[in-house]
Length: 370
Ligand code: 13P
Ligand code: SF4
Image (cartoon, rainbow, N blue to C red; front, side, top):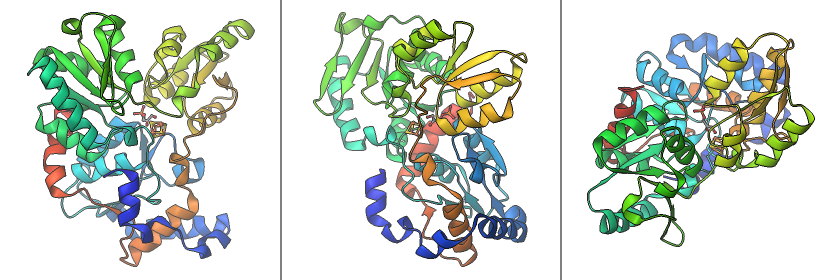
């Protein structure tokens, strides 16, 4: 289900009651702490690295998409998992947890614009057309930033999910299964990763889901990877011009970016990797080192605060925020926890069984190799 369909079926869960807007930060923090203390191990709050500080401070664990998926799969104790992240992450947690565990998303409008760029009908159309051209030579891979229905499609067709931290490993595995790959929905992660495996750009095609066209430059039979024409609206704001400006004005800076950034930007940067990789690189860097980071604003600002001994800036001087990640704030966290205590399950994320039973194949193929 994409974010629009989900909103239509759950309008009540989408809107926070007015009373939460008049609470002070102190009141909300007290309420959250008290509920956490009352529920103890029955409650688990995972938080993605892009979440706001006001939310991260209450997270029981923080991580990139891979780590949060692994933690969800391992956690069998918590009855209530309040996922501080975006919709596809909560869906993944629901698929990987047991029937008796319930996953909640504090604001049901916290989607991901990239995940919404591939819907299941478009995917089926694309698949039929690609089968006509290439026959049974393609394996589908999907970035976890996709709907559960896309994951189920991929799982049914022998493929797997990938995250930004294991995309290279998963692509290598995929090429042991089939001659070519359909990579959904982020063309940039697909292109950047294929490039690290030595696949030249003229062996990469782009599937346009709106016009049903396959764009490529070389010979069709040479195509190794078909990239879905999707992207992240946050990371596309880190441009080659940003890199060139830093090189000109602050040549001593190391430039590190997330692989959702465009190919041309990643090619000019010094390092590229997942949110966890970026955090680790800066942690390991010597005091006094200088860094320009190309990823979401909350994470960049947190890294800046945590490393006063290093000079750290955003690669794009107009800090780039993920508006949907930012929907999860202290009022929504407070509200969702109070709803759980009242047994009102409006923010409950439940992937239908007929989708979850196939999506789990795709996730498990990744988790076995992560
Ligand atoms: P990570 O897996 O690197 O945490 O990235 C998730 C994401 O949505 C980046 O935009
Ligand atoms: Fe989606 Fe981009 Fe936000 Fe990540 S940063 S959740 S890919 S919109």
